[in-house]
Figure 1 (cartoon, helix red, strand yellow):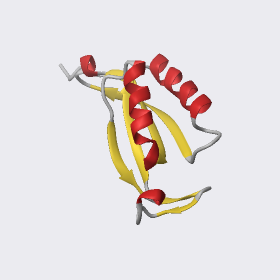
Figure 2 (figure 1 turned 90 degrees about the vertical axis):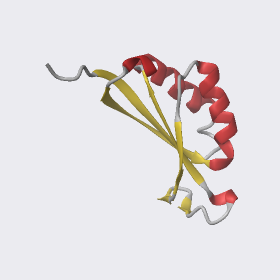
Figure 3 (figure 1 turned 60 degrees about the vertical axis):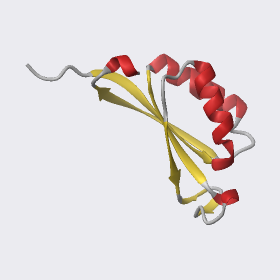
Figure 4 (figure 1 turned 45 degrees about the vertical axis):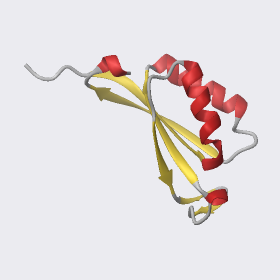
Length: 102
């Protein structure tokens, strides 16, 4: 008998580091059980983001949640942030153990 796996959505948000506090507050208010934040560097539509100083730093926020929660979060991010901030989001279906944590 193998390990039981259940599907969840992995939502990844890459955004300006200055948004961390606001986005974390939004996630918690939405009922997210947890998240992971790490520094992110790269180049895209807003140019090179090398994190050499705080104003050019990016973060990567990852959330494992239900599909309905991922859609709710995506709608909120689009309405609240997309027009005025450098931000990309993407979703992937993943399979997890310990589903009670998500």
